[in-house]
Length: 237
Image 1 (cartoon, helix red, strand yellow):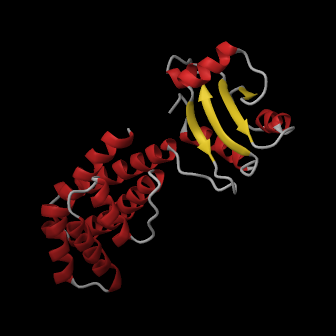
Image 2 (cartoon, rainbow, N blue to C red; image 1 turned 90 degrees about the horizontal axis):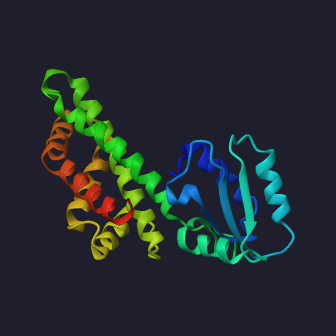
Image 3 (cartoon, helix red, strand yellow; image 1 turned 60 degrees about the vertical axis):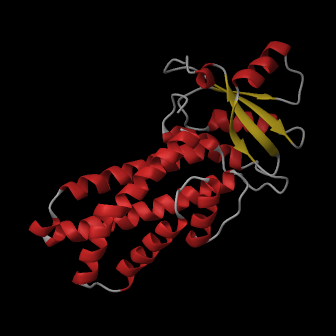
């Protein structure tokens, strides 16, 4: 993303978090937001501050960091040229935002990383389902474990997306109902039943239960996950 590794991107976010009560938003602009960057291009950041006289501290934190890139920071509220301001408004992409209390708000970058994690886990589940679990019980156990992991990532991604849209949810059940209302899943009941069966795998091991859930994963739940993936790609990718 923006030609940065996930590690480097979150190093930037960690520095900004130090000033979360004082920063309203941060946009990345220039070549890295437009996509015409080189590997060694500087990182241009425009920061809208709630307070004065901290921009030099932020610049110094980036200077003292172990980032391999030069980070150029400008204060959006101060005197900046019309061309730069136009570039920020045209090409700038929001990478960080807080509310008035300094609470960090979910942004599209975090959603993209959550989507990537979900997609990686889903791919591993698909690979597991290609094997014949009847040949080795370890395949059965491994597939169910991967299903549990994909489920956790899926409902948390759904929750994060809803919160990004301003919809507060807490539990998986509430998340599925709001996700259905928002159109990112087609049937909340199917997802609630998926959740119930996922919880069955946690409490006690029973081979008959394991095979029942495995069949549901192979014939039903993998398709729910794939449909959800398609919707999230349309929404945020």
